[in-house]
Length: 517
RNA sequence: GUCCCCUUCGUCUAGCGGUUAGGACUCGGGAUUUUCAUUCCCGCAACAGGGGUUCGAUUCCCCUAGGGGACGCCA
Image 1: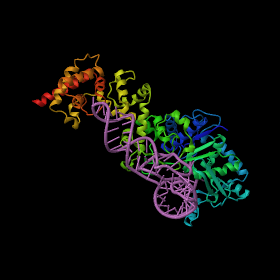
Image 2 (image 1 turned 90 degrees about the vertical axis):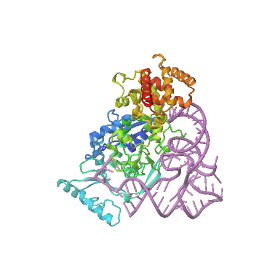
Image 3 (image 1 turned 180 degrees about the vertical axis):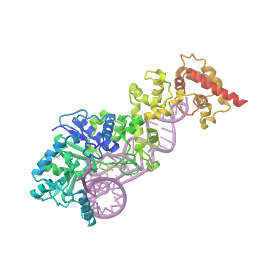
Image 4 (image 1 turned 90 degrees about the horizontal axis):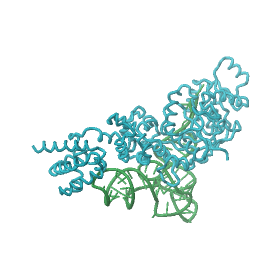
């Protein structure tokens, strides 16, 4: 069997969002699973909307997701160039061929003319197809119009009949070509139209499998007709379902179609995000949904893709009436995230299974952004910072969440910040327990202020004071953190360090005196 | 308007004529944990509706409803 070659062919007319990214992912995974090649091609034939900025954004997003392409921009390959705007001569050459064989013809109708005719046909309840006015112009008429400098497009002469798309995901879908009509393959600016350029490129680039959104299904008969006209073999088709937002509407700018880079900025790991996207419309044969990239790259198969649309259920869109997600920064965006989404669950699993050094390296920029850690301690090798981050990872769904926890370890403790529920604990025995523990804790050598030592002292306090369990531990927890939840207390205190613990306890005891007066 | 596609727990889905309709996330309960989180148990929860075909339909066919997509000198 010949080599599997898939491609992702974005048009650089905006940022890459989840829909496109998942298509890229599926193509990438399928190529990897089949031991084939993944090709990136830029479809920038729309001169008005394509931008260089968007081109770079798309590439950046793909790079962040680690969807590396074997051929394409920046890496080259044997079938380049890989930007359609650089392949104009190729399209022109093949268009000439079709023209010579009368499989295509020049059309001199103007855009306005066509618009009027289309409106008329619609009003009459006819399908809005081209009426074929220029279909049979004589050679003389054509030459005359060209010499008059009339602009023209090139239309494909659409044969009548039925076209069957044999699709890996959709099955066999039939189309009546009379509903299609002679469509344009070369625009009046000389640029190829989408349906024509894809075919030429996919053929020349030896693409074996076309995996794309089901929105392209109705384009496929047009493309098949072009393959037939050239006598080229069709690739295998796989049209996967679209992705909708939590309001069941197709993802759009105001419906959660966030740029992929937003997830990078929030601190999701690419492997976690890929894992989640892979589950949108596809499921692994063994049902195990938490997967590494290596697993995905070996088990993915388009044949297991679902036809029904999948919901990208990550944002609470009910809170986001008319909010343009693309314009939000990562902190604003965070407010719209469902805290308990499957993405977050998967992401937490991935963070916890990341190697320590890798985890520290990845999270450090986010820690730095919070700006509470002193500059001289902002270092991957700082033992205390490292221990703190390692202890906190179990709480994190994405790295930006570190800002909720990191401050406790670096900013001064203030009694006014004590949670209201914790305040209820601050009475009678509370201060006695705190004072008892304090006297024992400061007994420990500064150097051996470790979790096990601390625990021993606390137990000792319990024996002497008669306090135990919740009363004992919670009192101390509140006196040192002002909160009723958090890391295991001895560990927390060790991470806080001798000096801070001492200081915080003194603060609390001072408060006790003040209250007694 | 025309054509095409879709419809299984709230969500992602498994299923490919005979299953107590399975799993995952969420949610509820319990155990472990000095607290939260974790972990581990248990539980709630679905075949859009109506006709066929069949000994038997979630599965095959038709209709209805709902949803999506396509009908461009956009891709």
